[in-house]
Image 1 (tube, helix red, strand yellow):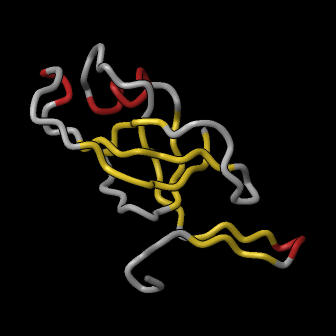
Image 2 (cartoon, helix red, strand yellow; image 1 turned 90 degrees about the vertical axis):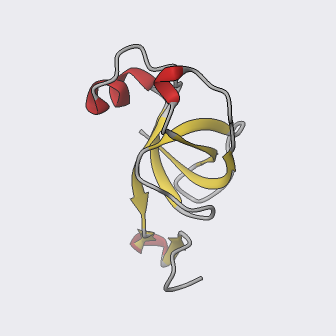
Length: 103
C-alpha cells in the first residue's frame, strides 16, 4: 500500500474492454510526510476520488481485479482508500487531503 494525492484524471474514449466504465486517475506518490516521491501513476479509481484527495493506493492491478471480479484487468494500480487526514501526533502536524468541507 502506498500514499498519494490525486492530481488529475485521464479521459479515454477508446480503451481496453475490461476498462470500460473504470475511472482512471493520476496519482502523485507521497511519503508519510507528504513529500512527493517518484513519478505520477495512472491507476484505476473505483471509489470516486476527487483531484486533491489524499489516497491509499496499491501498485498491484491483480488485487483490484479480483476484488471487482474482473480477470486480467490491464491496470498497474488502483485507489483502495480515500484519506481524510494523516495525523503526525509525535510531530504535531496534520497532512490533510482535499474534501468538500475544507476546500
